[in-house]
Image 1 (cartoon, helix red, strand yellow):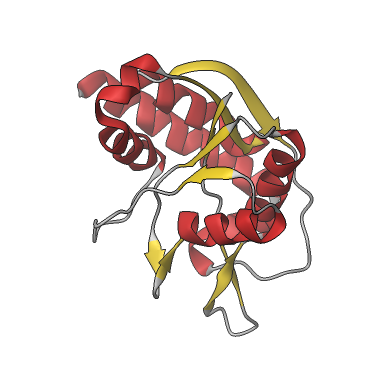
Image 2 (cartoon, one colour):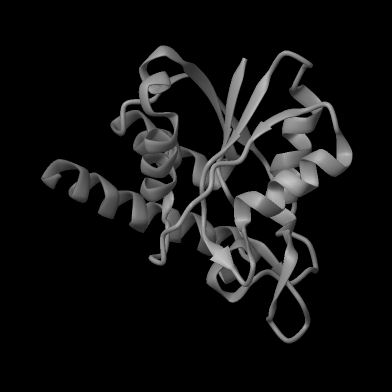
Length: 175
């Protein structure tokens, strides 16, 4: 089985400065993946943003390998200075996969609230998705980098995702 894991932010310290670990949401998604993968499975970490010296998905790679050294995890390099949104996650991964892209099918793993938009975008980009794993996350009293402040408030996160999903649908029709 091939899994694509969508990035879900970076943890922050009390002053709001990014820390070198996945956010509480991303860790719950990664723990879900760790619980379902088998030895022959491959986990593709969707390319994401760099904050400081490491990207979201590189931090996720470290997290997974620290918990399961036998996991087969693919962590593509990204050299984009622009913000990478969910569409960018899909496009960068598609570019990385190159000719393998059309030959593979995937399960998509993502935080539930974010998963509907991620599913739409990855399908729109041509990914063959067999199943969507919508991971419920528990809001924690833990800081998250300011870019993802809304993750701490599920109703706000849902509104954000709805509005951005509508934007993506409109953009998708235009591009």
